Amino acid sequence: MNAETIIQGRRICDRELGLVRRLLCEHPDWHRTRLSRELCAAWDWRDDSGRIKDMACRTLLLKLEARGLVRLPARRRAPVNDARNRCLPQVEYSRSPIDAPLCSLLPLTIQVVDQGTKDMSLFKRLIAEHHYLGLRNTVGENLKYLIRDAHGRLLSCLLFGSAAWRCKDRDLFIEWDDSARRQNLSLLTNNTRFLVLPWVRVPNLASHVLSRIARRICRDWEEKYGHGVWALETFVDRARFTGACYQAANWRKVGRSTGRTRNDTLNRGPLSSVKDVYLYPLARQFRRRLCAVPCSRELSEDSL
Image (cartoon, rainbow, N blue to C red):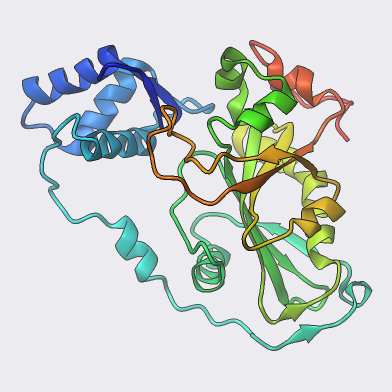
C-alpha cells in the first residue's frame, strides 16, 4: 500500500498493514476474533470506556480483505449479523392512523432504549420495516430513542451513532484540524436514523421531537458513556428530503457532502448521492470544546 488511508476511523499505512500480515503469517491457527483482539491490544485501540474496539477492528479486517490487501482465515461459523436482522422477533404494535394537532398529543414520552428489552426489539422492528435505509447493526457509542404520545401510542424513533470520520464543510464550520478531529470525534454524534411512523400525520411533530432530544441528549450520553456530546450532525439526502424539520428545529445547514463515503480518503470509490450537512451545537462554546486537545469531558454551565 503506497499511501495511507482511513478505515473505521483509523489511519492505516504500510506499518499497520505489515503488522496484520505478520500476525496472519505467524499465527495461521488464529481465528478472526483472536486476530482482531490481538490487533486492538497492539494498537491500544479502545473506546472511551476503555473497552477494546473489537467489532470496529473486525470490520477493518474485512475491508482490507475486500481491497485484496490481506487474506483472512476461513470463517469458523456463518456470520450472524445479517441473519439476526432478517430474523427479528415479532413484536405487536398498533398501526392505527394518528392524525391530530400536536397539542392534543402532549406531553410526549421520550425513552432511551436499553439493550435486551422489549422496546429494543420494537425499535429494531420499526426501523427495519419502515425506514428507507433499513436496519444495520450499530458499532461504537450510540443512543436509541422511542417517542410516544400522552396516550402511549408510538410516534417516532431516532438513532444517534458515530459521527462521520471526515466531512469538509462540517470540519470547516467547527474549525477542526486533523489532530483535534481525531481527538474529539466522539464528542460529536450523528443522527443516522429518524423515523416518524408512516401512519402518523401530526404537523410540527418532527421538529418538536428534534428540539426535545437536543435538550437532553448530552446528559443521556454522559449517563451511558461517562462523557457528554457537544454537537449533533446529520446528512439529509437531497433527492428525498428538504431538511425542513431540521431547519425548523434550528439545526444549521453548514454545507454539502461530496457524495463519497466516510472512509474514501483517496477519492477512488464510487460516488453516492450528495447530502446536505446539518449541525446542531449543544453548547455556546462548542467550537472551543470540540477543538480542545486534550478535550474536557465534563458538563458545564454553558450548556444550552
